[in-house]
Each structure stands twice: as structure tokens, then as C-alpha cells.
Amino acid sequence: MEDDLKKILDEQGKLLREIRGHTKALHRAMIWGRVWSLVSLFAFFILPLVLVYYYVYPAFQNYLASFKAVTSGQMRPDQFMSNIPPMFQSMMKLQGIDLEALQKQARQNSGAQNLGGQAQQRMNAGSKSRQ
Image (cartoon, rainbow, N blue to C red):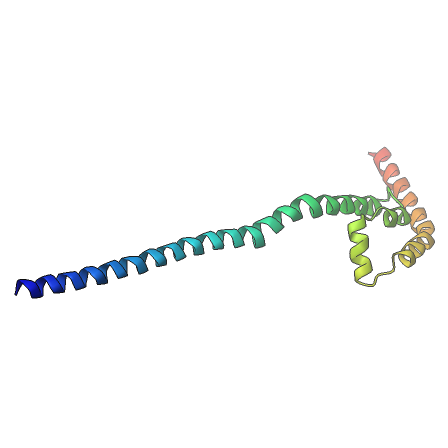
């Protein structure tokens, strides 16, 4: 009877050690899964957002400032076309937009728009003097 119990206990001990090894392997796999998920989160989401903030955002701000200057009449449209950042120029080329044709058209239209901008400035100056 004691021999049978010892035999059963030894067999259960072997099975428990085997289960413990599988549990350790599973635990290691879970830890590496967490590490990989953090690495992929950083590489695919956080890093691109940081790069966009440091590289694209300043270029976009420059472009937006130039656009505001054109719409307020402080800059001629042909000057605006020459101030487009190189990154946006390359994007426009990839999309098949002809920058030279746009600049030529802006130069042609800038005379008429510049006159309109000067008239607008005169009107604004007149309304300020009346106040």
C-alpha cells in the first residue's frame, strides 16, 4: 500500500514539474507579448505622431502663414507660390500638379488681385480715419 502511494506521489510530482515548466513558458510568452505590443504601439503610432509634430507641423505652419498673408493682401500670389516648402512641392509633384504652370497663372492674376488688395487697403484706411 505504501509503495503504491509512493509511486502515485512520484508520478504526480513528475506531472507537476511538467505543468510548472509549461506554465513558465506560457508566462514568458505573455511577457514577450506585452513587450512586443508596447514596441509596436510606439513604432506604429507614437513615433509617427512625434515625427509629424517635429517635421510636418512647422512646414505646414509656414505654408499657412504664407496663405494668410496672401488672403490678407500682404503678399502677392506669385510670391506665395515661391514660398511653398520643398516638402509640399514634392507632394504636389507626386500628385501630378504642375507648379510652374501654377506660378505662371499666379503671376498673370497677381496684377488684378494686387489692384484689388490695394483698393481694399485704401477702404480700410478710410474707414479707420472716419472712426
